[in-house]
Amino acid sequence: MEPETFPDELIDALIGVQRLLRRRLRPQIAPQLRGAEIELLRLVVTRPGVGISDAAKELHLAGNSVSTLVNQLSRQGYLVRETDPGDRRAARLTPTPAAVARLNEWRKRRAELVRGGLSRLHETDREALRAAVPALRELADNLHEEAEKS
Image (cartoon, rainbow, N blue to C red; front, side):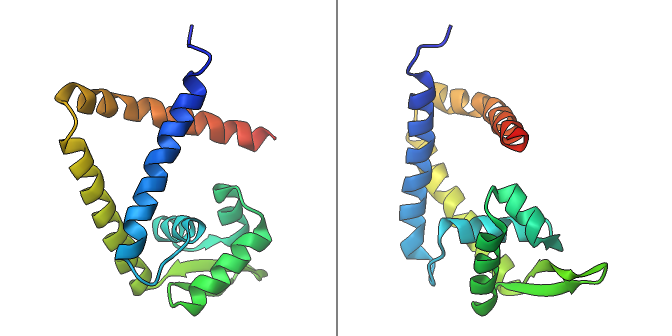
């Protein structure tokens, strides 16, 4: 049986890593983007042509929140919002070359930061983290499924 504190400890550790990465990366890449903006860019680069409602569902955000993010990112030259030919009321999102370049730079710097942190860990700790990745992905899938049910 898991100790009562394990879920909180796991969440705190994951949030701590994410927060530190964000803080370290933010000053290196200008103009600065908020976490939700980066998440939307990541989604659109991965799934060009995604609709706003699908993006909202995927990111667990309200549709109007995603529309606001789309407007901001479009003004900054990172997203193109096009009318869906199948439904003139809907929009399809595609990344600009600037968005792809920005995301690639962000990923590169993020990987460098994590690689540096990992290099200072003992090999057994690196192996434990490597072995935990599939379980963390499954946990994310389970949490996603729970969110879909509610």
